Image (tube, rainbow, N blue to C red; front, side):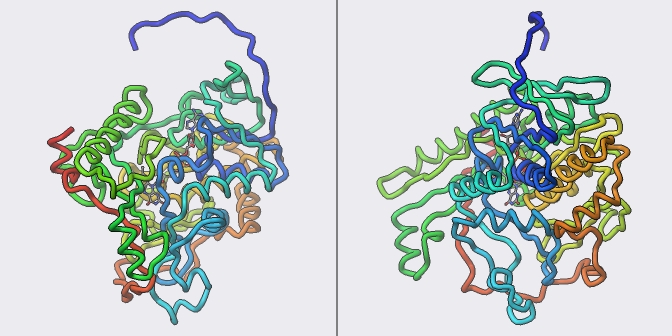
Length: 449
Ligand SMILES: Cc1cc2nc3c(=O)[nH]c(=O)nc-3n(C[C@H](O)[C@H](O)[C@H](O)COP(=O)(O)OP(=O)(O)OC[C@H]3O[C@@H](n4cnc5c(N)ncnc54)[C@H](O)[C@@H]3O)c2cc1C
């Protein structure tokens, strides 16, 4: 920006004070807030939209990708697992039976530990979970800037219906998805633009009839349609599709407008009395935007099965293939080298900018780092210490008590490259259900936009 105006110094009213303040109510923010509240800390969750879930709900990413390694071992646990069940508390699910009913894997070796879920039902369940845990959720407030005291954040200023108000806290979690708080506090961050693609639910008379004729239920009467570039369906380097920045006004607007134009173009060609587009995302679907550099990082190429002293839990890549390797995620990936009391959570944590980010941005990983960040913030408030000096052994102890598995068990190691031997069981194959619009496949997309 080249032109500036000067604003008067303002007296800003303090709206709330808390032990732990979480910015952003996506999956990571929910996990962080619940984890901090479970440590007995007064916790406030600030969300700019009017519902919880972030990309998982408002961005229509209603596929809770696998918590397992494809060989029958549960990898992600703690709140990553609990939030899967919260997502389907009032919703249909598409879980494979051996996970749903916890029968022996050997008897039913089909399927992964994952599910799709109904977006409105998940929103209502996330509200309930936060209420039950004593988290105060405040909607319709946009974090705008930190109140700094050296390298410490004393509070955040949010834009609201009442104008600018301050929320003060002892510890903060940045679960904004875009590292807004970390970046404005002066942390080391980097950015990566994102391809444009969005999902929308649709149905048609034909889809509904087909599902009924096959004896299937409501979940098969609708399907997800993907508009835009396919991240894993083609060589993106060969097809230079447009990308957008998730950290600029122009980038976010460019994304939203392009993505809606694609949906509108699709409707122009396909609308009829027998077709119904059911939903549209109300949040731009940025896969990557900005994340922190961290004191430590995770490298997808070299860190599989690596023992990390400061692990806060284990994770695997839900889109990495039928069989995937586990990773221990380091506490140092949640914190900046200077900022004393802010923890990153979700798709803002430190990792390499290729497959590492692809893995750490998935819902189970966001829940895992969210839980660790919220617990760390609560612990730092308890110990009256900084993020850099936090007693990590104590953090691991608290996470272990919350059912998080910290280090990779022996039986999970050595799976690299092992082919999966199992076929999906057709009884549990739902149409969920991604359809690609031919005109919107990569090549067409390139020509159109
Ligand atoms: C197209 C697409 C497909 C995907 N597919 C899958 C999939 O199939 N399965 C899977 O597991 N993952 C998938 N992902 C990844 C996953 O959905 C997200 O990365 C994950 O949900 C991010 O969670 P988060 O909590 O870190 O961030 P977000 O969900 O982005 O949450 C951030 C929250 O912070 C709020 N916020 C932002 N800025 C501010 C501010 N300044 N003040 C206040 N609040 C603020 C936002 O409104 C939002 O609620 C996909 C992502 C995309 C984009």
